[in-house]
Image (cartoon, rainbow, N blue to C red; front, side):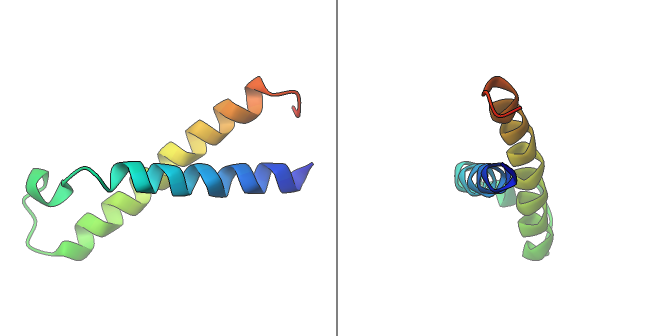
Length: 63
């Protein structure tokens, strides 16, 4: 059932990246380099996606 885990992690990462992209981090973070803001968005979506995927996998019958 490892393929279910992988699909869940990738799907949650994509969903969290899509949801977090609605937040204007460039106005919140006063940084001149836009790449730092994009890296922040990527890392936040990876962390949140991991937590959401862990939650979803724990409440299902697969674990």
